[in-house]
Image 1 (spheres, rainbow, N blue to C red):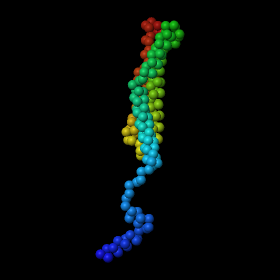
Image 2 (cartoon, rainbow, N blue to C red; image 1 turned 135 degrees about the horizontal axis):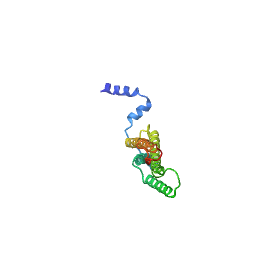
Image 3 (tube, rainbow, N blue to C red; image 1 turned 180 degrees about the vertical axis):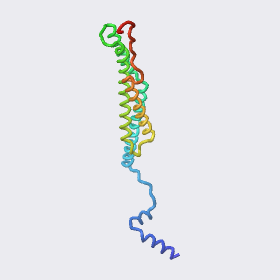
Length: 182
């Protein structure tokens, strides 16, 4: 039995002094002080607020990207306004191309508004992805929704650009009357 105690003593003697104390001290639960609990609560609140804000920004990016593709009430209202302005110009003889005033201007106004929504979606989602890309505390769904917002916004920019430049359908033209110009 003496030899067993000697081996134990030899083993503990080879450790540095700081490690011996840690090994011999029983594990005690951490003391709960009001200061420590308040600090932990503040850290948790800050972390959850950052996650909450990031999630909200990701949802906004995705929503704006979707709105850029489907249109918004703002783009509808501005398109209707341009149609009315075109009708007034056509009735009063304000000059200019009536087809452009009645069709082209409203179409391009809707494309511009949708393009602005798409650009904001790309910017919000892109900034969120850049800021949260390397942070380990970011929830995966936040990154996924932000990426979805960027993708939808990118598609929205392409569609809005195509609408504005009349790539999908050409602007209607009034056919030439028979016997004129020939």
